[in-house]
Length: 122
Image (tube, rainbow, N blue to C red):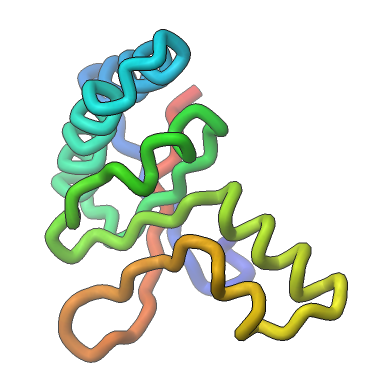
């Protein structure tokens, strides 16, 4: 990431990790609406820590990606959808054809994509 000019922003609060873990558990239990709410709380914490974009890097969190409310200027990247899109393009499908996958919302304002990744703390 740093070679591409991006800076990682990893929230250090215990509450961030608790919300992420809770969301994952809720997805596994089939409680998608509650998992989305927990994910939104984690995204709020990430944004407060300075993130302007987040990467949903856990497969369980991809399940809630489409259920998230607009996070007020925070770009949310579903890693599964991004990987699928990249695979389609690599396989020779045009970027227009790969656009059938969920898109990444642009930041409000000038439409420019800026990134800082809030990743799951280990």
